[in-house]
Image 1 (cartoon, rainbow, N blue to C red):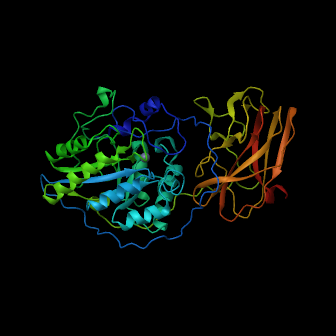
Image 2 (cartoon, rainbow, N blue to C red):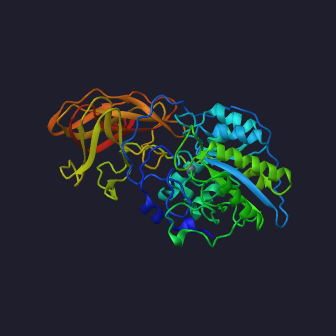
Image 3 (cartoon, rainbow, N blue to C red):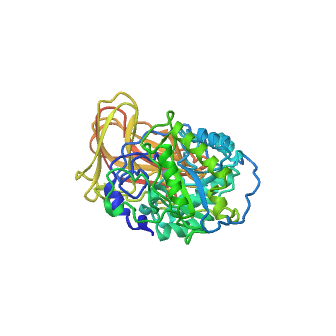
Length: 490
Ligand SMILES: [Zn+2]
């Protein structure tokens, strides 16, 4: 059954919580899917001084065996998986190792090394203990909301990063269990051997307030080995914080009643990492002890996802590159904020950091067309707020050529001084604050703010910029542009 693939709109309607960082949390009813961000992102926290991505090899590991796991009729195999690479996963990996068990850790390469997430050194330790590192996209988007090229960048570039660090990457998990025929094709084309969904098997302890239509209580108890569709393997709903060791045991016992494969999806361990999707460490420990005992008694097998599916570690396949705008063209998409989706300008992101209370809206007081962006800043103490091009992998953010020189501009009126805040995308995808322009004065009439950026650093592949307020006031801005100076001066 491929229920989740038919439900993206329903999940969108169920989205309750707003998050920016790829933290999986609440579960919309029944499908066992992960917390997602709504289509309108909240003001963001500024990213600063994060390690740059790159192909620096961290570890040399032996290649895993390529034979698929052979499971006889009635035999059960369990995979313990952790999604999202949260910091507490390192403790989980050590506990599993102590019990002689190996699992799979699906991580987002762009969050590795950031606050709350595993470091590269943690990943090396996890892999050296014999666990599998798997891919979960660059930044944990809902793949169903992206274009085909951006989907391939999210999946392929993440895998390329992880392979570049030295991990033998074979297995993928869909963020928010949001799969589609196109996404499955991308997972295969990016070189993965499998992709994991959620909520396709009967769940012993379904999430609360489950829609009966989505409860999956008539679903199978285990996936078959080998799966009918390795790019969409079936699993129960993700483990939630209210699952006890006996709930986990029962989920496995249910699978053992028919035989086959069960992938259990955890997110982290409480008390160091507590939310609705993390597991009390004592319950996890009790479950591991039981599981190890069952394996020792020959009643089941515990294997990584990659070892169940088998197959070689395929070479990296780069995602499609988003080229810079052609000579003379404005690189900003939807530059006049005219194209809207659910009331928000397509390809634009509300961003803020520090202590302040920004309010973003649209204004009919436009410079061109019918729409401009309005920002009202209140209760300002420090930081800033601005509307920026979405900080993505190339669909929205304007690509630039390393070593190139560019001029940014926008028409604005403002009750307070404003300046351009410039963010840089480094390498395949890591965004970080770049610099600010000098300030432009307050103006009651539309005025053109224009500024020539310094030469692009060698690893910068895209910019995102906006006019920022760093004091109380009201700013209206419209008709943004980014133009290659080398072309503009000819
Ligand atoms: Zn996730």
